[in-house]
Amino acid sequence: MSARAAWLAWIVWALSVVFTMLSLWLLIENLSYPDVPVYLYWAEDTLLAVGYSTVGAVTASHRPGNPVGWVLCSIGLSWGVAHLTSEYATYALLAAPGSLPAAEAAAWIYSWIWVPALGFIVFLPLLFPTGRLPSARWRPFAWLSVLVAVAGSVVAAFSPGPGVGFSIQNPFGIESLPDLNEELQAFMFVLIFVAAASLVWRLHRASGVERQQIKWVAYAGALGGGASLPTYTVLEAADLRWLHLVGYVAALVGILGVPTAVGIAIMRYRLYGIDILINRTLVYGILTAMLVALYFGGIVLLQGMFVALTSEKSTLAVVASTLLIAALFTPLRHRIQSFIDKRFYRSKYDARRTLEAFSATLRDETDLEALNNDLVSVVRETMQPAHVSLWLRSGTVSAGSGGSEELRS
Picture 1 (tube, rainbow, N blue to C red):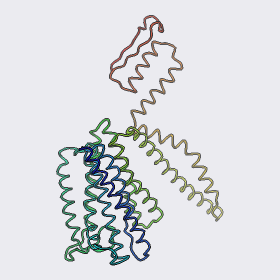
Picture 2: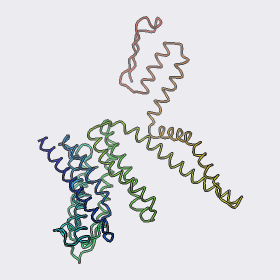
Picture 3: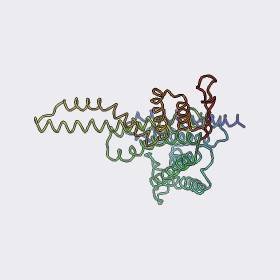
Picture 4: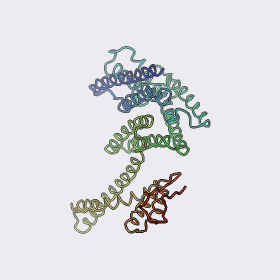
């Protein structure tokens, strides 16, 4: 059964990769026709198809009993089909009409395939990492998601409008029906958001390995979602092209980061490194934002002063702001690191402070009996073991100190 599962998983991966390669080849052909509109989400579909199917194949072949791997495979394959049908229909209907068969069928398939593709994404956070729902209370939501995906696919299949990000009208759409594609897409994203919230619910109840697994995926999802939300809404609407491009690249990295995090979590590869990664992201993210604000704020303020005094702008404003940033980098980093440790890593912060205090005591303490008590106390406070024993070799302590000392926490 395990061998069959591995073969099936890798067959799905191979199909996703082949579909993606054909899609990219058709994309290049379509780009040679300047008047042909480009399918908007080709980069996203490429990463979804290859990234999710690859991690899904590895996960399903090693953990065939966990549905998460099969959900990943389904996501990759469905977006591979979506990308191929979109590029195929664009080439066969717009770039070189009549050159390929079944062009209208390809356009029709894309008009609805994106709905179940988003539906599979809903079940990724719902089932991660155990392969089961967080609790029985989430069962109605799971059935609602299935119902919406199925009904939405039927509605989209006969909707007269084009598919999401597509420029070709549904060839089999019924003109008398309303075009509900945008509303359907928004509702599917609401379902994905609610499903992602289930990870927060799991995180509060989880411990040990499962807690670290959820942290990995939550971290990747937060980065990807944080980059995607402003990129596809605010920045695109405001026409801030350069900032939109930066956010777009970050969103693509986030798309690829989610399956990578899922793979690390399921395979349990360096799980506990996520705490360091989150810590560094918080510290340097806040530090970068503060330094950028100080830099540009300093330039604006100093340039205003120069203009008021000399009626001319000066490069000294840029030099002074640069020197200010260089001077503030280290102290700001230490202060932010201390704040993050106190606020989010309190136990580790307290343990570090305890060890620092013990180190100071160790330099000045001469009473071995008092030092024994301090050492046991430090171990108990920092490591919090169930049982602490300190054994000293006979003849190395003064009379009356005893050969051992035990404390229970």
